[in-house]
Image (cartoon, rainbow, N blue to C red; front, side, top):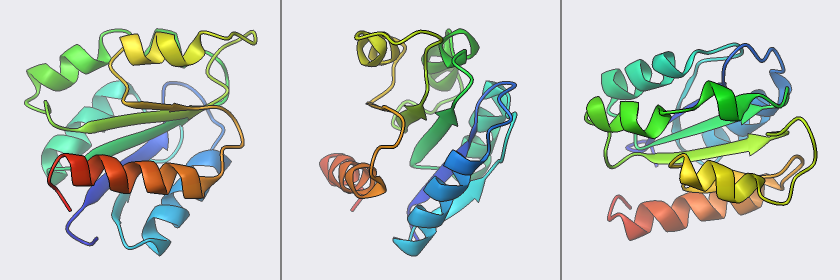
Length: 138
């Protein structure tokens, strides 16, 4: 999996770093090349890192509930940057209030996978492998 590069980080002004550290560690343990951006990462930095590393996926976390605002137009910016084939995943506490339509709202923003808090990393890793296989990258 060393040929597969995944960008990780906590999006926006969110300082909650534990989720992204867990994701990054699980990805490394599974053999992926991980570029960990850390906490409080502006969306544009994810795009820049993906361009510089020819990344295959971005996995973002957020716990402060404002990621939807932070990521308005993000998929369009990815397309403008030539990242039309990149997988976009996000997880965590993605809304200020509990909402049944969180997944749908983030999928409308262009995310391939949306995970609620405390999702088992085995699920996300299996999804990533399946999605990469479907794109012919594995």
